[in-house]
Amino acid sequence: MILKLIIFLLVAGFVYRFFGGKIPFIDKKPLSKEEHEFGQIEATSECAHCGTYMTEDDALIYHRKAYCSNECLEASKKLK
Image (cartoon, rainbow, N blue to C red):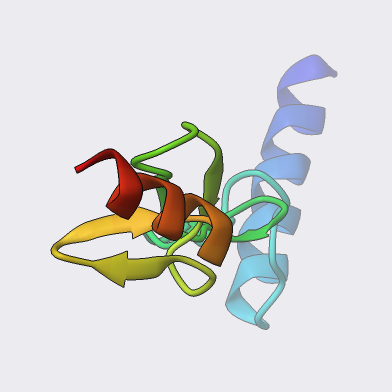
């Protein structure tokens, strides 16, 4: 009886897959390095003056260093 049930489930699974069925957790497409389960991962940088983290799109670059705002940029210029 149990053998018949196992054979039936295997045949049903093959028929399901043959007609394009997707099985959750087995047919899951692997995420690329740039994707995360909550969305796309953005690269971050640390401010050279205050240490705040911001996305690289928001960073101000000056002499190959990233700054979070004009205030931090000006403050680091005054320190030099």
